Image (spheres, rainbow, N blue to C red):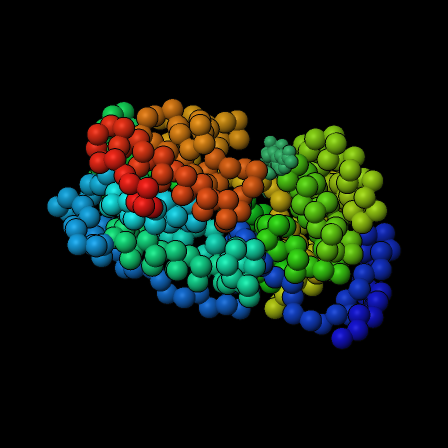
Length: 390
Ligand code: NDP
C-alpha cells in the first residue's frame, strides 16, 4: 500500500494549510496495549462473556477453592477483602487465595477494570502475539477463582475502617474483612461527546503508551493543556508524522519545561483556544469538528486519530473519610502498599498516577497481598506462612 499525500480538497485548509496524508486506507489505528482506552467499540472485538449474574442479595459465594468454605455463612466474612477487580485486585486475589486467605473480591458492577475497555494488549509480558484486554482479565479472574477467591459483582457503597473487622457495604450487604486491599483504580476523563464514545477503539484513545504504536506515520491530535497532554503529545511524535495539541484556553496548566519541550518539537503543533465539538468518521476517525473558543468559528479538519488527555479521576470517593488522599484525589501509600490504617493496603492506579500500566498494577496487587498476609501473621490472625505459600 502506498501513502499518496493528498491535499484536503473541498475543505478549508486545515491548520493553516497543512497538507495531511489520507492516502492510507489501512485499518484505523485503534486501541492498543497495556492500559485502556475505554469505551464500547473494542476495535471490532466482541467482548467475551465472563461476568457472572449476581444473586439477588448481591453476593457471589462461589467457593471453588481447595477444600474449604472460603467464607462465613452468607459468604460475607474473610481474612481479606479486595475492593476492585482490575489487574491489581485480581493479582492480589491470586496471591491471597494461594496463601489461604480465602479472599472476597468486591469486583464492582462492571468488573475487570479499564482493560475491559481496550482491545489489543501488546505490552503485557508473556503474550508474544498480544491478547485482548477482556480475555486477559477473564484469565486473571479464572486463575483467582481456581484457588478459591469469591467474587461479588457489585459496587461498594460505603466502608468503615474504624476498627477490625473492617466493614464494607455493597448492594446493601455488609462484608467484613480482617484486612483490606483497596484496588479501585482510576478512570480516564472523556470529553463526553457521542462521537467520541462511538469511535473509542477506532482511532479515539485515552492512553498514548498503550495505543501510540498503532498510529505510526499518521497525523493525530491530543486534547488537553496539562502535563499529561504535553507528555503524551511528545511521546506520540515517536510514531505520528504530526501531533496537533488542542487546548480550549490560551494558557496551559502543564509545567514550563514540558511546554518548552513541545514548542521546540517540530512534529508538534499547538492550537490554543481550540475545542473539539465532534469526532468525524463512521468506522474510524477521519476528522475533527473544531471550535475556536475565542471567535466561536467552527471548522472541520481531517485527522486520523484523537488522544484524550484531560486527566484521570481516581476512584477514591468511598475512602476519603478513612484514608489520605493527595491534591489530585489519589490515595497516599506508605511503605510500598500501606495506608494510614493498619491492615488496609493500597494497590494499582488508585494511588499510581505515574505509570498506570496493567503490569505495574498487577505487581502492586502482588505486593499488597504479600503485605496483607504478613500483617495478618503479625496480628496472629493467620499462621506464619512458609516460603512456598505464594
Ligand atoms: P490536569 O488537570 O493538570 O489538566 C487537565 C487539562 O485538560 C487541563 O488543561 C484542562 O483544561 C483540560 N480539560 C479538562 N477537562 C476538559 C474538557 N472537558 N475539555 C477540554 N479540555 C479539558 O490533568 P493532567 O492529567 O494533565 O495532570 C494531572 C496531574 O498529574 C498534574 O498534577 C500533573 O502535573 C501530573 N502529571 C505529571 C507528569 C510529569 O511530571 N511527568 C505527567 C502527567 C501528569 P483547563 O486548563 O482549561 O482546565
